[in-house]
Image 1: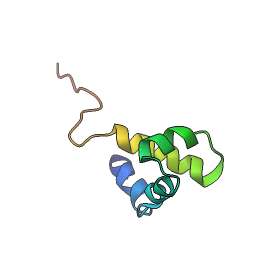
Image 2: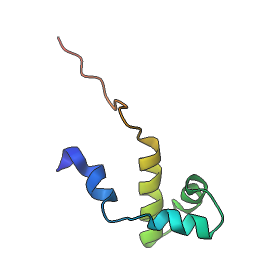
Image 3: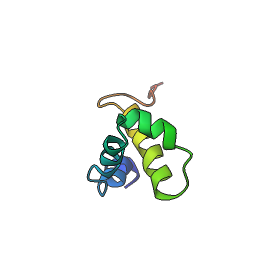
Length: 67
């Protein structure tokens, strides 16, 4: 489960945060940076959106050094 935590975290979102950003007339990134300190569910969604935007497919988060 720990290996695929992002998949599980985003499984139930269904674009809800993106819709909130569009309703506010902002991009997802702008809205997330504004609301990252918000209390409750909105703040959690904003922080998760920022993590998801930073993660890029194929990016290595660490380097395994052998030897």
